[in-house]
Image (cartoon, rainbow, N blue to C red):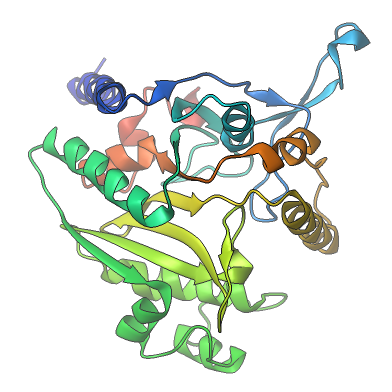
Amino acid sequence: MTAELHDALRQRAQLNALIRAFFSERAVLEVETPILSAAGNTEPNIDSFQTRFSGHRDGGEPLRWLRTSPEHALKRLLAAGVGDCYELGRVFRNGEAGGRHNPEFTMLEWYRVGWDHHRLIEETAALVQQALALVGRTATLDIIDYRSLYQRHLGIDPFAASLPALQQALGEGVVDGEGLGRDDWLDLLMTHHIQPQFDTAVMTVVHDWPASQAALARVRPGEPPLAERFELYLGAVELANGYHELNDAAEQRARFAHDLQRRRARGQVLPPIDEALLQALPQLPACAGVAVGVDRLLMAMNHTGRIADVLAFEFACS
């Protein structure tokens, strides 16, 4: 074992201990939820691993999906009355392997009953600050809404700009634009032009996203309507994605159906909708939740762009 690997393992253990102490002090309960599910993730830009249960059919649906996050199961616990809770565990995403991605990685996800996304931003930033302290670093906090972010860095209004204007802002020849929609172009502007400008000593939190990118977040009516969602970046590295959680089952079913429509148009696998989550949503208390990529946090703490630097074994060697 190299000294670098030993240091990486020790630092991960320290971060895990810090996370558990952080939530113990705040009386947030640690829970464990299933890694295998009868439902898959419908999000078109995320692919799930599948496996098949070979035992007796009394065990339920044999086709199972490895979770891409613990979100659905945690919300079912919240709906059952568990209260503030978190999970620190492994999640899986097919097709994501490379310098910054590993098909299996560690995710921290937690929920706060009675909170909105703005209050959760403060707690998420506090956790990241404590993690940075492990390596003798600090970061300032810059909270900005989605529209102001694009105006600051690109001089365009992401809600009003035409599709050709977004394409022009990205630049010629950056990507093959065939089949890309408005949200795809906005995402490309974020990853190619905005994120690279973020200072490594700054936590940038972007809130009030387009309603079309709400996922499982509430949408606030207005002109334009806005998703009550935030993302936190340390430097250019995206660390966290948080929501003021939607508890409208009919609206969530419509979003799942829209996801499947997009997947069908792309010729992708069509995972089953999570009916258990939809049944639980009407009992979900008002709450906010956030997911943090622990491997990404370790990468940002150590100024490395290689996820392999913070893993015991990268995918190619596992």
